[in-house]
Image (cartoon, rainbow, N blue to C red):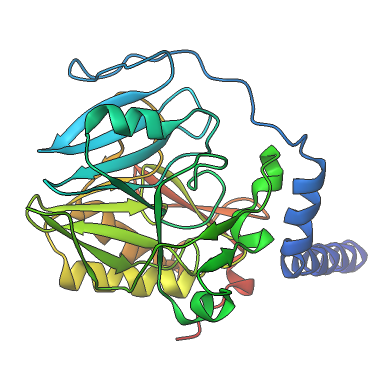
Length: 319
């Protein structure tokens, strides 16, 4: 019996060491995955049933008006089922995210307005920055570490910020036309939206607040399905801090994220989902919510959301 116990302890110790090594070197693991993943997007999904009000401008994109002059542009045939958002004022329009760029979302946005369109990504991962699409004007969140890295108004993404090698996209360099700080009001003429810094999924992640229509466009911070909190730049503590701030400062909103897991329509969540996320993060931190798997571990938040994260003993919860 004692021999079996010692063997079990030895195997468990080896497993923990391997797990620690794997997670501590996840940047290398991700880089290796990028190098050997095939370098091209997976095949398109079959067309799906959508809402009765959904417009299909072609065989790929969908359009849903979620508020007056506010359009969710979906890519439901792309395997990540991305959603980007076009916010239209009477002088300018803002495109928040642009998908991976395997089809030209700019043409869809320009079919919805004749106004100049500024493109603003929620963060720099390849499936949000419209790789290869030429935009007339681009904006980027103004964070000190990004501004310090820029040469003039030229910003080169870091490889682990972009992750584009997974699908064969080169790491881009952008000319930045607007640097918008967290809290800045973006004037589109007869409407104003606000930049909200929402780190957690990545350091540069932002959301877009539309107080008039009680909307928060959340990018990859909050959406239906698995939330990725194990990529480089992700942070469980940041996720929790952001949830607390949003609940305190922007209550009773409708939340629209950048991905969905199933049709129909854009990925909409509620304040209850955000509250469940906050409680789950606190329970993970305190050891009250157990995950499944080795790496990443999956934690169930509710029927709409899960969290994919490092194992508990390797998570950084430093305030």
